[in-house]
Image 1 (cartoon, one colour):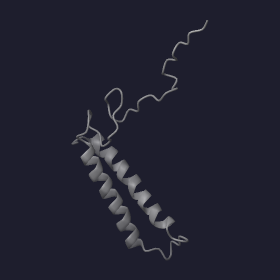
Image 2: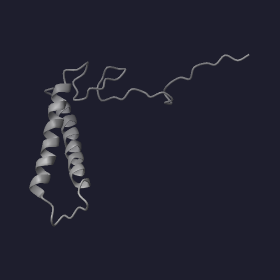
Image 3: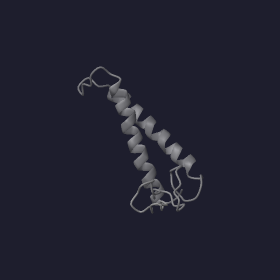
Length: 99
């Protein structure tokens, strides 16, 4: 949890959460007008989303192997490296008996 990589990944998640919170606020309005927007409220909503994201990252750091803000673990045990999905080119096809 005390690595640069951890905090970079946590910051990326926090920025995405802040943007999602803002979209949720603005989508609920009938129309978005930048001139009439309540920017103080928007900043508060975005900051709240970012804080919740960082807290989630901190809570996730002690789960499983690796030092990542992610709850998802891969087959290799290294967080941040996605496990192959069924049908990926790296996966071998099962042999089918014919006859």
